[in-house]
Amino acid sequence: ADLVREVITLGTPFGGASKTVIAFAHSDAPLPWLRATTRDITRTFPGVYDLIPSGEPVVVPGGHTRALEPDDIESTGGKRTLTVEAFERRQQFNELIANGRTANYRTLTGTHQHTISTLSFDNGTVTPRFETGALDRRGDGTVPNLSASPQGIPRQFLPQSHGALTRSPEALAMVESLLTDTELGRPLGTGGVGIDAPELAEPGMIPVQLDATNEPTVSVEELFDDRPARQ
Image 1 (cartoon, rainbow, N blue to C red):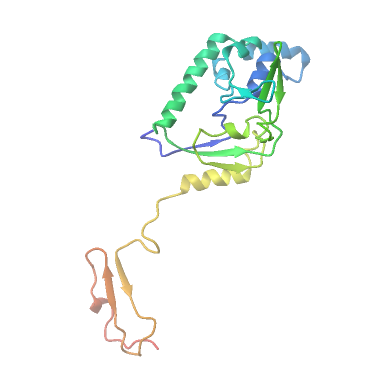
Image 2: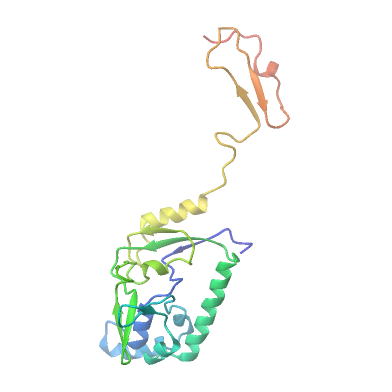
């Protein structure tokens, strides 16, 4: 964190994505004969388990919500061991954020796209849902709205899909602006020697006052000789 000024993220799923759990259960690969193979391979990648949604994405009868448990992931065909390890990594990251031990984050959240945000389980079958509470908080089509930033970090929004975030001119302009931003000096100036003159003065009589913030390097005589003032 000491070597990094800022981290700029575009649609990064800090809070995971409910779509991940659906991928453990069944693949949406375009070719039917690839779906079982894709699903089985997905279940073996430790990094995919880092995308398991945090918070309380599981909707239970009565409209209440709860957190995902290793049992839920295992019921979809996921690996319990990889799930537990991923939960531990996320807890460690959240502790770093809470203690201010990470870099300054600038996040961009994609919005206004139909996005799986919550889930429900019924006898081992997982069903995607699109609402968070009573609202459909549309994300970028992959990452839910509330997942695209660490907790407590201010967010910026752009109505784009997940894949388009890294290509849209508006997102690229935001990244460019953040990279080229710099600390400003004194308002309307950078310090040094300044000249304070009245708004009105008689011709030939211009009182001049030097306002020096550092040792002046020029004198009034060098700035103004005996030449008559302009009218």
